[in-house]
Image 1 (cartoon, rainbow, N blue to C red):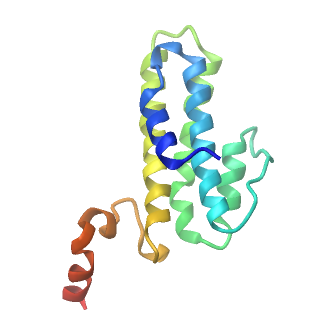
Image 2: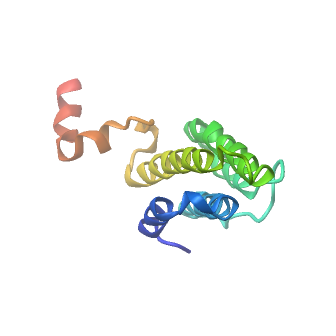
Length: 146
């Protein structure tokens, strides 16, 4: 399995000018980060597809028993949407911009999942996670809130 650091770097290094090849790579990185989540839950990542995408099947698998994980459902669907835009209209004038948007959404998914993996109390996580945002000051912040 690809490391989270390799996924993060890979997302940043994808060459948007390659159109469909870039979209394929970004989809693979997104699947890889979801594989980390499923594996962390003690399951084997599925090879099934939902609506034609393994990404959506992995999200469905990862969301079982964890309602907070549904927060990234639309992110996964948006990745699939941009993938379809790029691969179904590879000669469109907007292809490079579409790949760049896909990269941003993939980065968001990566940050969401890697953040959830970092936080021991998964129920405390959201897209603007206090533990990650506050770093070492998190415990002091929680004590002040209590």
